[in-house]
Image (tube, rainbow, N blue to C red; front, top):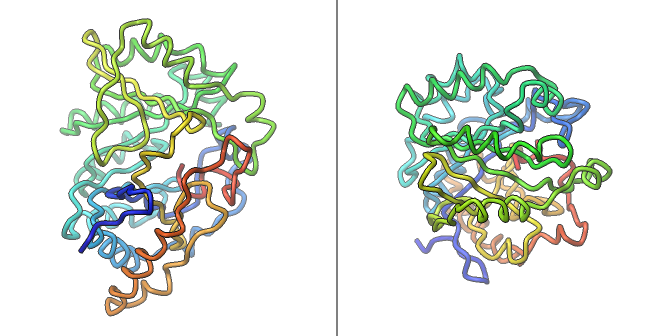
Length: 326
């Protein structure tokens, strides 16, 4: 079957699947008051997830990233990983997590079949980490990273949302941290959502400033793998780790888009900032619906737009990043 492709010729080997919109952190750029509204109990069931990923696999999706909210709040998280990993055509299963109890749970994630972990660490300073996330859990996250490497994981990426006045002075600390560790630090520009307008205006800072400093220090941009996300990655001969930049406000950011999203309620999101999703859940109730599901997914690609229009202040239906896991 011909792989998914839109009218611009962009191909989509990569699916981000949210399995819950519930999160237990209170990050000031996303859920400063905590997760006061969610649909956790109505999230996709295991059999629905299996049918969904099976259809996307038939359409050329090879990599699935499990997101939330916080995906490990699902009691059946490890089973979800195992089921997705066992679907023919899926060669890589990754996850994005806030690292909650990672030191206790990471080995079970890897044993279930996780191939790569993206971890949110917005500061290496314990007090700044607490101020940003609402939790004093940096130590257990660092212990979890060490356990993951000791257990054989070869790919860990650490996401840090760039926040002016809160963590934008930590570049040197992050660089020193990856000098002897095979970790990729990915600095993500703060994105405006429906709930964070004033916070965005106060704390947004361009990733271009970090890029300028990296180039001055001799870092070199590396080629992006076909199934990679949107980050520009940089390497340096003196460092084991890498630095990535995700700059959604940069010109032509959407030109190389290679990922689709499905919400925890079964809606296909053609963009993180779409006004609304395309419901797939009615076609996830029986194995006999696979052909109809494939057709709906393919037809939906015709609606994918050229860009996200964030630079125009359009945030669509995304009120906070926990809705779809970023």
